[in-house]
Length: 154
Length: 119
Ligand code: HEM
Image (tube, rainbow over all chains, first blue to last red; front, side, top):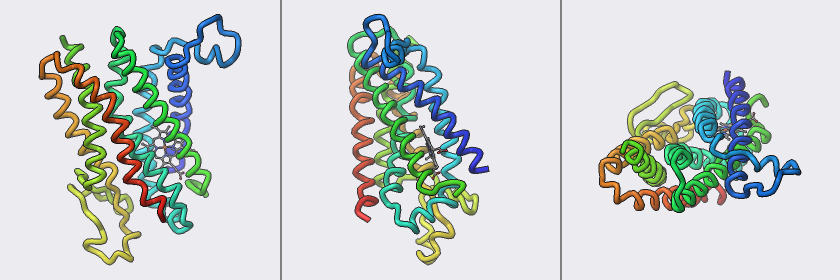
């Protein structure tokens, strides 16, 4: 069961990573001229259209992660400790903390993207989008690395 | 009117959640403790090594993360509601908090994680 939930967790986070990366690039480095390259087209999207999907995907990823964590604590963490993977466990600790803080920031992030933008809220919207993107990338990379070291199914 | 109240709630909630989460982590303020191996949830913070030999700790690993998150969510909800009820002219303050507090809380959590990197 733990493995099934982990695979679902991994799949949902792929969609989340794509959506937040599109939105972040569209916000921070919008394409100006007619997009020609892949990178130009990637960032030429309308950022606001991703907001609801990002909130929903984040909450689902978070909930699935929270369930997988119960299995991880019992089945995986003891062997990582036995093999002295302290740094990996430290990075995972940060994943726990960052993803929780990200969950708390979601209502503010949502609200920033659904209001008419003045100067201050534009800056806050960019800042919160960047913060969420950092959290999602961190969680994604740490989750993968930990799974590769010898997580579920090994 | 409702929009502006929700905005104040959301900004205050985000900042307070981050602050309370870092505090809960630093001070061990877990609303409950989860024992996944036994499938038990106990109110408040419990350490199995306080009641059993530390050598047996691995039999009943405890998890505080759920409890810290719940503590932060409850605290932030109260702050968010108060912020929504306070006058709209305080909005810039909540915007400022939503800017500054979450990154600071993440830095504080990184600081709390340093022991893992000294092992
Ligand atoms: C919301 C953002 C999150 C993202 C983007 C994310 C991403 C990932 C990814 C990509 C994996 C690897 C999946 C695989 O290789 O099959 C993973 C594994 C994992 N994640 Fe998450 N995750 C998130 C949130 C969470 C949360 C909140 C928790 C709970 C604390 C969590 C706990 C775990 C665990 C326990 C694993 C398995 C590690 C192992 O196999 O050793 N994740 N995550």
